[in-house]
Length: 166
Image (tube, rainbow, N blue to C red; front, side, top):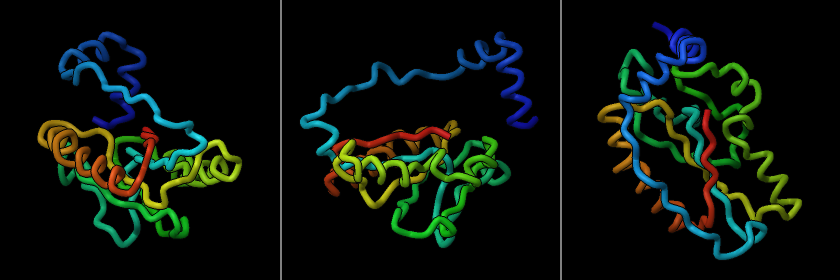
C-alpha cells in the first residue's frame, strides 16, 4: 500500500484517519518557553523533517530498509551549494521540495529575514531528521536524537529553532 493511497484514504474516508489516530500516543502538554529577547536579536536554527542530508553523508533509511523510519539526524552546513543537498525520504512526495529546497529547508528565506532585521541571524548549521517514524525509531527520535539536537543548538548559541515539516 503506498503512502499516497493511505493519504487519499485519510482525506476521503475520515473514519480511517480517526481510527488510525486512536493508535497514536500523545506526548502530553508541550512546553513553552517565552523569548528572552526580540526575535530580531535571536540566532535561529532550523530543523527539517524532510530527510535532507548532504551527498557525502549516510542517507536516511528508506521504507524497504526499515518500515519504522529513521530516528537519526544529520547536521547540514548551510554554506554548502544547493547541489550538495539531497532528500532521502519515502513517506512524502518530494518533487516540489527537490525543485525548491526552501520548501523544507528555508535557508535562503531566513537569510533574507536576517538581512532585513526580522531575525538576528541564521545559525549556519541546520539539522535534518526524517519525519514519519514509528516504534523503536520514534523512541530513538524522542529520547536520543531530540535531546542531542537541543544540546547542540544550546551549545552553539541558538536562541530559537524553526521546525519545518515536510
